[in-house]
Every structure is written in structure tokens, then in C-alpha cells.
Length: 359
Image (cartoon, rainbow, N blue to C red; front, side, top):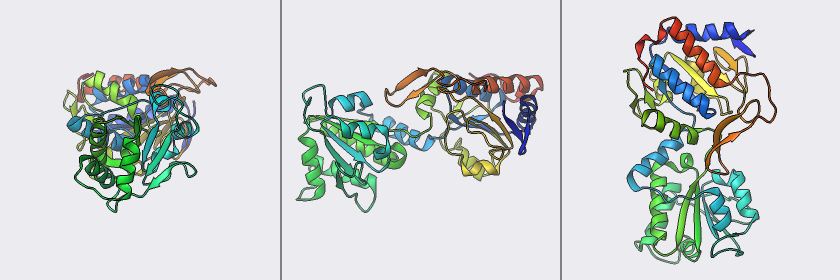
């Protein structure tokens, strides 16, 4: 397997020992990224529970925007298949959803199921052109996307009125039989997501309306259920006091690094995500599929699930965890096996004594 220590190429055993040495000295380690298959995510939680590490994810900003809104107002959600099959009106909120494969499917097809089957699909965009040739663009309010959604909600509630673009947009939406509000939680933000969910619920008084969040390259949508069945909590948790403690602010790895609270990080990206800027500021181990010598202090190349090896991870098109077989098998190790090796070696050298197994 390809591996590097301090920029120099080395063998697997040496890289594992270098990572163990780095982690064994750490008093406040973090396992971050977690863009990987379910087996690796579970192995990351197992290792964190045994060495007293905290957990954070690559897509935590969007994840907590959704979870915060969900805890207060609930959610009216659909799936990509339902959106493609039934929606005769799609409102794209922001720029990010327009860059997804789902948007291409929506723009090139018509509804095939339900009362809207065979009708044209109205593509509407708030804040950015989702499809320059087909989507009707409505400019956002000066305050941004969240304020724009709040204005739409005010028109829907009758608190605002007039011959305005927002009013015209509302008329187009309420004339539809199945509406989908497409958004990216990280782009829209927690307040915006809350407004959008409430707007969907109000539209459901007269028609059918659902929201559909699109996700980025990260695997947060796989991490959330694994975290729930492993700890009973959301992803940002710490294991330094023997039991998992959930705290979205305290265990934000970027905040921890900026505050000098972290002395070692394992960055897990068996499925590629951008390298965070803060990683260079702390001793680090990178378990990555797109491995480079300069990525971290210790770099170990791992197989990419669905390509180098089989694995279960989030299927954006099906909105579910799905097994993906290897399309081009290689001899690269799985991230789960490397994390397991680290756990075993750390136990042998006594580094796991800070925390009893918590999960």
C-alpha cells in the first residue's frame, strides 16, 4: 500500500507505527471527515470510543443546519425518485442544487406518475439559474436566501401582498399539483431551512409540497444514521469522559483547532472530499483515497468504496444506504481495516487507557 511519513515514501508497517506514535501522545485527538463507507464510519466510532477522541464530519455545516430546523419545526421531505416521477413544479433555492445530476434529470423529463403525469414541469429558481435555458429566475432579497424564503412564507400566510415577483412566484407554485423545493442545507443555513420547511407545510394546506435536500461530496447522510444507532446522538460527539457526549459547538473540529484544543487529527476520506485548511495546523494522519505525500504528517492510501472495493455508502439518487460493488478492484486496504489496525496497536501500547469502550 502507498504510504508516506513526513513526506517520505515508506511501507505500510512503518506508516501504521508512525500514526500510532502520533496518536499515543495525543491528549485531545479528533477523528474528522468520515467521508467513507459504513464499515469505516463504524470503525472510526469504535476507535474514538477507545482512545477518547471526538468526532466531526466533512459536511457538518449542512448536517446541523438540517438537524437544528428538524428539531424545531419538523420536515416535509420527498426523494429524488418521487421528485422526478411526480413533481410538476420545482423551486430551486440557491446555486448549489442546480449543479447536481438530479437537476439535469428534472430538466430533461416530465412527471410520469400521479395526477401530474404527462404535464410539463415548471422549473423555478430563487437566487441562481438552475438551468439557464429552462428555469424562470427570481432574484433573492437583499438579505439573502433565508430572507427570500421568509418573504415567500409571508406572502403564503397573507402577511404580505402586492404585484411583486414573490407574489407571482407564489401563484405559480400554488397552481401546481406536486411541488418540490430543492435546496442545499449548507448554502441555505439553519434559519433558511427552518423557513423553507414551514413554507412547505403552509403550501400543503392547498396543494402537495415537499422539500428535498441535496448533499455534497461528503458522506454525512451515512454518518447520521451510524451515529444514531451507535451512540443515540448526532455526529459531533466526544468520548473523552467514557461516555459519548454530543455538543455541536464544542466538538466542531475547526473551532477546536483554532482554539488550540486539538493535538492530533485522523482525517478519513475514503470517498474524496476537499482537504480542510486547518489540517496543516495540527499533527495529522490522513486515510485518503486521493493520497499525496504532503496531505498530512502520516498518509496512508486506502481503497475507494465502489471502485477499489465494495462497500455500503449513501446513494444520492436513491436517498438510501446502498451496497456498491468494486468496479475496478485493487489491493489497496479498506479504511476500516486500517482503523482497526490502529485500534489494535494503540491498545497494545496502552494508549487506550483514557477511555473505556463507549460504543
